[in-house]
Image (tube, rainbow, N blue to C red):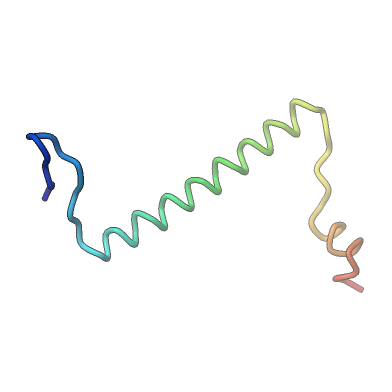
Length: 63
């Protein structure tokens, strides 16, 4: 269902569960896009990714 102003749709009324799922999906998509951008930048700069275990070890989070 749409709410209109001067015959133009300005808002939509949707089920709360659908809205929750849409917001979760949008967040997941944003995360995927951020990872893709980071990989592209890494490749563009010719950098080598640092393994996650190495990062945790450097931060003192692993023995």
